[in-house]
Amino acid sequence: MNQQFEQELQNSWQERQEYAEMMLPLIGRLYRKHAVEITVYGRPLLNASAIDVIKAHRMVRLHEGIKLRLRESWPILEALSLMQLAPAQIDIGKLAFDFNYGSAVDNTDLPGYLSKQLGSVIDKSDEQTPRDVVLYGFGRIGRLLARLLIERQGANNKLRLRAVVVRGGREGDLEKRASLLRRDSVHGPFNGSITVDNERQAIKANGSFIQVIYADSPDQVDYTQYGIDNALVIDNTGIWRDEDGLGLHLQAKGTEKVILTAPGKGNIKNIVHGVNNDTITNEDKILSAASCTTNAITPVLKALDEEYGIVSGHVETVHSYTNDQNLIDNYHKAERRGRSAPLNMVITETGAAKAVAKAYPKLSGKLTGNAIRVPTPNVSLAILNINLDQTTDKLQVNEFLRNIALFSPLQHQIDYTASKEVVSSDLVGTRAAAVVDSQATIVAQNRVTLYVWYDNEFGYSCQVMRVVRDMANLSFPTLPT
Image (cartoon, rainbow, N blue to C red):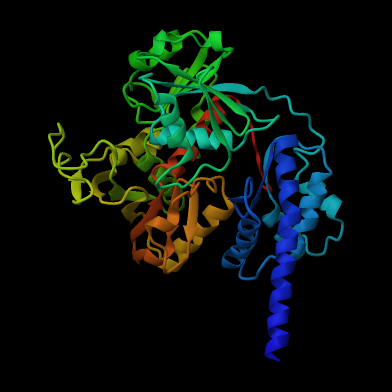
């Protein structure tokens, strides 16, 4: 009996591996040929391994109560691979579950079902023009943005990383920049190949030719001499944060628009994708992607406010230390930040609570906030203490947020975990702006306390990329709706 059970278990695993291995080339081909990204309940499969594909399918049980087999999603993917599709993000997990267990369970006509669900992108031509992208600065966020841009390298890639601008230019600088892109102490090794072209002063990564330009000021660069034109410049230095400073980028030849990866000052729009990206217009030349904390908490607060109404609240962020703090005790112009970051919890200010109102004005004046920097290198936690307009309970709030994470327009911003064992390091590499820890939710009548994790580096970088796509007028609908 035990031998029979073990054999069945082994056969089941082997079947899953075989289906996953068959899926990988189709997933890659769909992106390279049509710019179609495949997901399973929001988990991206582009550049995934066979094990990643299997794990993504296993996660469906947590959401639906029953498992989704790879042999059930395989026909969906196979059918997609034979279609002429416009760029989109298509969730084969949701399609397969609905077709096999949901509203379409009695529908045996798969082509007809897919035609109904994906009609907006089937047999549609792709008329979207690729755009040049320049990274101004190559620090923590800059290098992660480079990874996100390079992972989508291909003939149909719409955002092409053409150059990186940095200060310096000393001997060995290029090799060190490439090495920092190749190896990361938090996010692991680069997924691919990186070489240095000293003659052309460039980095070659997965087929991308990335010019490295040395300059001390944005207006000193002539991008057109490198064949770059109408570029979107992503300023991740944080040096210039107002219109005058960021406007220097627009004085450089070959640039069209600028996005700042920090809160903007003055009248600059602070965009939190999923919340107020609909305010972006073609006339906007300078935008801010706000802060990592603002991107983490605003989508969750918006969802809660629209469902229950928020009267008031306090946001406390437990934030990983950043490069702005000192490694050892030393002078720092800000209070407390001069003390050693790896050795202390440091109380400091955050403007995130007030910044929420810039993206979601309905909460103006309703929130307070503070921050504690802690000795971890990445992944932070926002504790939201909220007073609602109505009474509720833990089950109802968690169920609401779970559905928001899976099926709402905020599904790219909000993720959800029901794990009782999750800790901060488990969330490294999370692509959502926020992950609701449902096990920690506390509800007492109209008072709700939510614990929201966020990868303050990678998750934020993913949000920046979503804003960049909107600035470039690129459309990638998420299907099924």
